[in-house]
Length: 168
Image 1 (cartoon, helix red, strand yellow):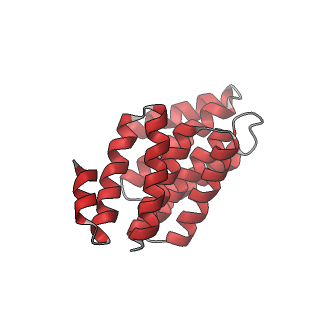
Image 2: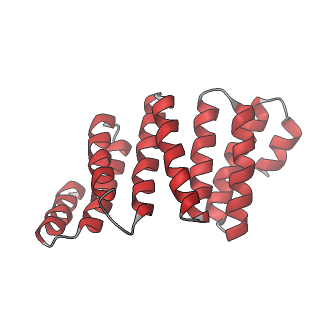
C-alpha cells in the first residue's frame, strides 16, 4: 500500500540519517492523509515535517513547503486564521529566498483562502499578483489554476465581464 511504502521511505531516511528525504516523506504522508480527509493525522505528519525541516541548514524551501501544506489543511478545516498564518509565513520565506515558483503558489493559496472566507476583493488582488508571478516564469499550470480562482473572485464581486475573461 501507499502507506507501507511511505513507512519504508521514512525508515530508510532514519536508518541512513537522511533528514531531507524524511521531511519530503512526511510531507507526502501528510498530504495523503489530507486527501483521505483525516485532517488531524495530516497535521501531525506535516508538523513533524515542519519540525525536522527547521533543522535543515540550507533548505528553507522545505520549511515553506511544510507551512504551505499545513495552511491548506487548516483552510479545508475552516480554520482560516491558522491557515493564513501558515501560508503567510511560507510566503515570507519564499520571498526571502526569491523562489518565484513558490511565491506564485503561496499567493494563489492565500487568495483561495480569502475567497473561502468570502473576501473576494482581497482575493482578486492576490490572484493578480500570483498570475503576474506565474506568468513571468512560464508556469502555465499554476496560471490556469489562478485564472479559475480569479474568475470566481471577480464573479463574486459582480465583475462578470472580467470574470468571463479570466475563465476564457
